[in-house]
Image (cartoon, rainbow, N blue to C red):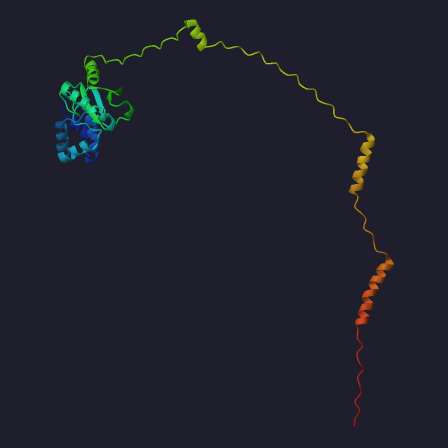
Length: 261
């Protein structure tokens, strides 16, 4: 049983300058020191801070990280989910409680075991499941669960049964089995580098072919000449508009003189 230290509560309160808003950190420091929250220390904390004791206990019961009872040396977690429940988890719990005189959520008198019942541990395929100090035990029965706890109490945890080695195939000796499992690996022949192909010579054009190609380029490069109109044809074309203009002119009638009566 942990011994309460005199003046430790005052030391924690001075650490946080008597600020009531720092109640949760103060309670965390108390639990870090004792492993749980001793009732006498919670009463002293409420009195020194001037807050109701109900408020202190309300915070302690709201957060699951706080513990109002001391924890045992070994934490036993028993899954009580639907699958584990149907496969006999309640009988396992009853056997543990009867053996050590505790209830789910309680701790043994010698502070050796703390029994905790949870809704699920995420291993439904192994139901019923018991977890002891983080180690999973699947398919537990009342007898097998008590055997594990008794082994821890005696100082030696019950080791799981070892599996028997697989039998060798009939008619094969040990060297034959080894050869059949690991056939020898043949080394690959060294790679042979292929000879590089010699470049092919490019045929050069003859001088006559070069001259013909230049003449073709010159012929295609010269623009086609546009034929100019002849002088006579241009003069005739100019006279035609003048004749048309003369034909269009209409002579004005001469003015008649009026004779007096």
